[in-house]
Length: 495
Image (tube, rainbow, N blue to C red; front, side, top):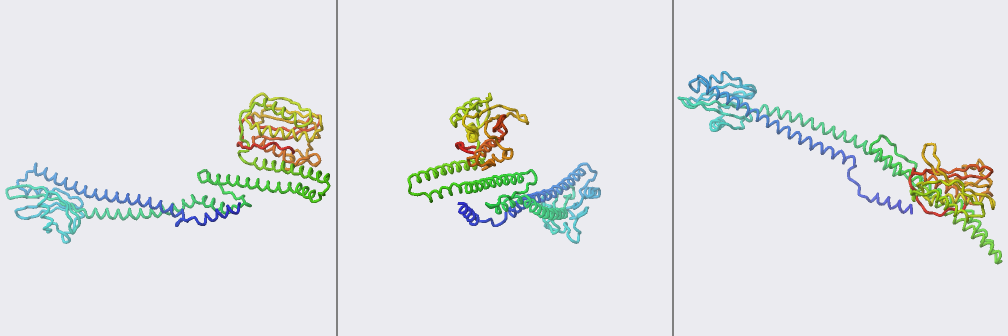
């Protein structure tokens, strides 16, 4: 079954279509794409706004110069347009890229006052550009493309006796547009470097982020049925650390499950070998005599019954490792439970059954499991005591060392007691006392009792009884302190 499942998993993983690029490349690619789009949009918006600012500044310069000229024309003492233009131009200080032209229409004369960043006259003379001047004289404002780049203009006319005179303000924006282009080139270079840096950081971060995932994959690939000891290193307190903790917890459960399974197989193989050998030997030697056959059948039936009990106990112990072993936890009246247990014990054997102290109150326990444990202890006591001896059942509430309340159940007998060397060993699987004759069972009953007590978050131990004998003590918290577990097996008949 395991081989088939493994082969199916291997086939599924092999046939699964693989991603063309590793996940790390996908992460870096998407981060770089997102960053590139963001940087591109930012650069585009920045360049558009800078170019718009160039035009707005040029328009503001034109508007200011025209307003100043019109104000002087209204309040000035000059009587004709040519004198007004000469006076205005002499008093102005043009800004960068700004060219002031005073045009006398009747003579075709130009008066010029220019600022910095104006094309040299030998390179480009706007007054010699007939097409440009025609546009300027036909429209009060406008924009035109010239060999010297973009130029914006505004015109204000003054009428006098000789004809029309015009104040023309030209602003060349090519120099500022070059600055915008240079700035855009610089921003583009910075953006490219930022994109490369973002990709490098994304590569490094994604590697660190995916490293625990790779470790999980490697650990999962290395895990086999015979080696579940591999654990992931836990570093930090983030989600990846939680993933490593969760994976380690899963490995713990798998290791425990495989160990339980292996122990069950080993125990069953070891302990069942003897009864099987006995059965086979008697069957091989069985003759035709009816009395001999009846004796053999009786021996074989007894051994089969013992094997059945042993397998049942082994299954119970195997299932006790499951987290739902103790599952029927609810408030239970301990006084009522004690009386019910006493009634059940009366029919176990010819003993003097007594009830000592009786706890008055409730505890949250699995009553079926606790009853199973007490019946197991009582059965164990009957196997180590003589007919007519006293066996006492008691229940009480005690306060533990940590201040919590505990339910304490005891079964005390007047048997031979438990040697000091066997006090702890008898609660292990197949942990019989040193004197084999004193332990007729397989040695699983007390291990079941221990699993029930620990399933409740409690303990079980044995101590001497005043006057001789042994007292088995189960102490469990009255409130839930351990994960609930569950099963409903019948109590074992031997220890």
